[in-house]
Length: 441
Image (cartoon, rainbow, N blue to C red):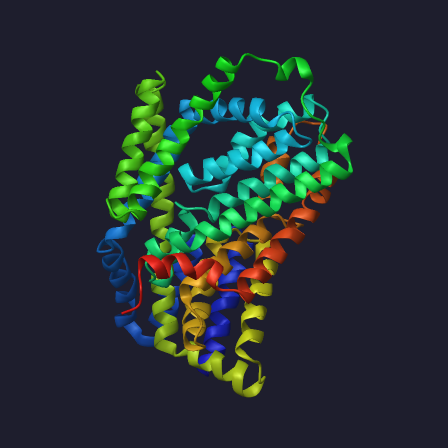
């Protein structure tokens, strides 16, 4: 059997196991181990062992549990609620002001958490009821929360970028920096869309009534001060790292410690909160570690087969595609897979094939990591099985049905496709900042 057929058999076996509902790490690890034993005999079983040793020696992996722990502590401290109250008063007088404030809230939550699910949970529990109560269009606000929460996997400290960096063997610090401007660009594009749409159709996002706006200046300033806590947390994690005071791992430790301090100051840190946060952190961290270990073993089999060179010859020599044609085809395949799989499964399935090919074609793997993450954002909101669509359906009130959720994401998906095209056309949007901090020598 040719190497190409073996690679095709591995992918088809993996997809079959995923369709049957097997756990991601179990499916990937089983296919990798079985393939290595069938190809190289008893010596092939050492691949899984080598992957586990490589994983344990990976120092940046310490950031993963620390950031996850930070996110769970913050979700219990009420910081998001205080920040939204401030945004509610200061942005409320504008048409669509609460929706604009929700996008700003999502960016802040993303910069403190690194997971999109946290933004979705906070948005649906805090922002959605307030906007519906004040006459906002239910389809628009549903789209706002889904689009805003998707920024969690792009804005640092993104857990998805940490996972990409580990699997692709790229520096997480550069990936984080590369995500800053694209994340802010998408947030700005969402805000501009909301402002224009609500200017043309004021009934979609009416301003707050005057009686709610007429509060004393002292109270307004007090609410504004409540918003300084998230800024302080963001600075403790990202600001100190970018200024060179802390390393990547030290930043995650500082962020986790700062989150505990804030929870303690607000009187929310007790044994139950700490116990629940630690258990959830352990569960998710172990899941990610198993996935990374399985992905490393899967990638080792591919390296041994030389499948990357075979695929490159197929695309360039036989199909005569240009490097940009191959890149676009990769992005389309991510969107299609994202209709059925989550971001972790997508990355693990295709990383052994796509990332070495991207490097061989002369593209920047840091830049490609941002493209991958943005495509995941789009896939999160793409029917029929977009991850964010079903999260919203589970969390939204009864008056918002599935058709409302599906139709709400159309303008935001269009905006994200435009943003993806801009970053593909102008790579400097993503690469300028890491190049400033890590100049080539």
